Length: 345
Image (tube, rainbow, N blue to C red; front, top):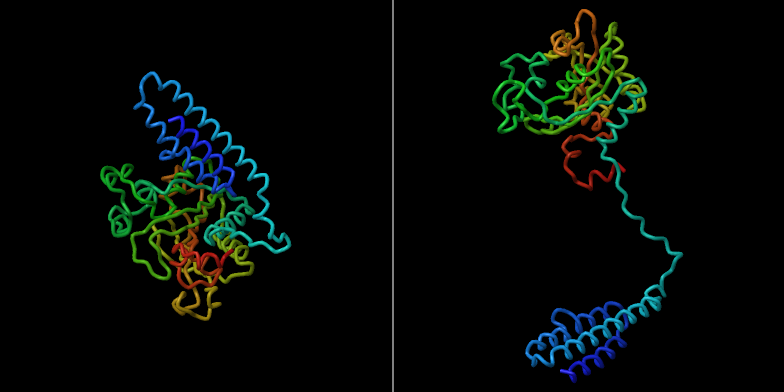
């Protein structure tokens, strides 16, 4: 065994000296001291020796192991100190390759721009979780008990939490307005806040509709607020977001949580009002419902309708992004296709 150790030490010294780089040196280390290395194989023979010889041979093996380790470490240091060859042909004057940089998703950027615009008007930013109850998603918003929006054909009810009373029936929020009622209950009137977030609808997707999309709700509640002030707010926000005045029109519409209610349209920015597939060739596109909070909604929030009034809008955030960039299919923004998204850096 002594002869094997002497031969291994000599062979190891030679291989270590001949290693020209760290990769080659690592191969030598594995050859000598790896799990299947030469020294390991010699150590496996130790139990086969006579018991009286084992201490001496064990000591000899450890000595060779320590010597080889020191030689390996020393050679590694030498190689690192002299490793200038890999940079010998490096030209520091050649321009480098710029790393790929990320950017905000266009919907996120639109949300931030709206936040800035509303903050400039004194609004607070509010948010909460994506799960709501039937109590806040429908009951406190004046939805009748038999309203079709309560059905699974429209709303995603959560399995295991879809029975019992209204406060225990849970769903993915189909709109943000129930969260606004919670805000009204927690804060003292008057209020002025916005509420951006994700909502979910069990509906067929097309160029203008998605199952999961973003809304941006704004609500003012005060003692004396004219309806005209609400329309001016809409026009001011759209002009800040798009950088120019955007024609707006308001049509009568019915929503359980507002009275009176309106469908609020903006001139299609894809075609400039001339007509295109996005606006169904009418030159206008619906971007938000709006109106005065219904008296029953104010009462659900603990407010007296005779004392307070307000103005509410719920902006289709995804559609605003379509208008900003002239994109004719809302599904592209949710596709995760980097070929599409990298255009908005």
